[in-house]
Structures are given as C-alpha cells and as structure tokens.
View 1 (tube, one colour):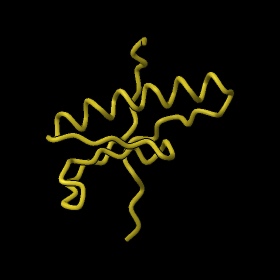
View 2 (cartoon, one colour):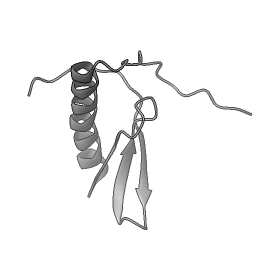
View 3 (cartoon, one colour):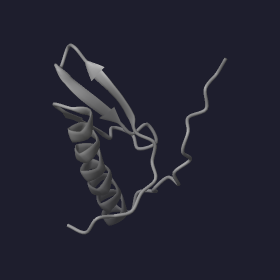
View 4 (cartoon, helix red, strand yellow):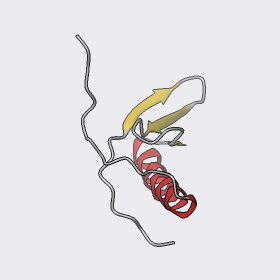
Amino acid sequence: MMKIEHRYEIILYWSAEDDACIAEVPELPGCAADGASHGEAIRNAEIVVDEWLETAREVGRPVPEPKGRRLTLA
C-alpha cells in the first residue's frame, strides 16, 4: 500500500480500561488505533489514516481537509 501524506491531528492518551495507548483522529470519523506505547499507537494511527483516506476515495466519500489543532471551547 502506498503511504499517503496527511496532516491530521492525532489525540493520544492512555486507556486503563484497554491497557493501551489510544490514538484518535477526530477529523476522520471512526479513525483510531492503539498500541502498547505512545510510539506504537502513533505508527498504527498513521496506517489507519492511510487506509481511511484510501477507502474514502475508492468509494467516493468526501475527504475532509486537515484543520490541525482542535477548536477548544472555554
């Protein structure tokens, strides 16, 4: 599979429930990965983002432009 360049925000946190690091990509619905370490979770998230984008393009779904940092409400 070809690596697709992307600039989507990844939110990384530890989940005691899953006993793993979780990497979520909020701009791509349902796009998340996990790993035993922060690095592994990020690497897995990059793979999942590539697959999400490739699948969306193949089936004709819109691909959101990466916005970067999340808007936080005070």
